[in-house]
Image (cartoon, rainbow, N blue to C red; front, side):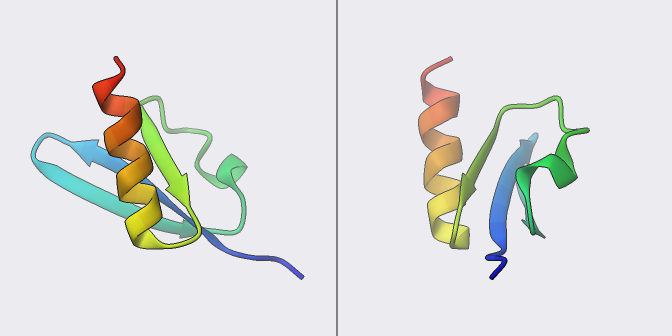
Amino acid sequence: MVVDMWVAVEFGDVTVLFNVEDEANVSWLKKVHGTGYTREEAVEDLKGRSSSE
């Protein structure tokens, strides 16, 4: 069973969410991004990664 995941990316003041089957589907992203099984998890992961840089 394939479980889709969410990928969150910030572009300026905007957070963009992608629903993908695999993180490799957005390998073209060069920006810091967060992942999760829900939109909320992806945004929280993004915030954690962004604050550590």
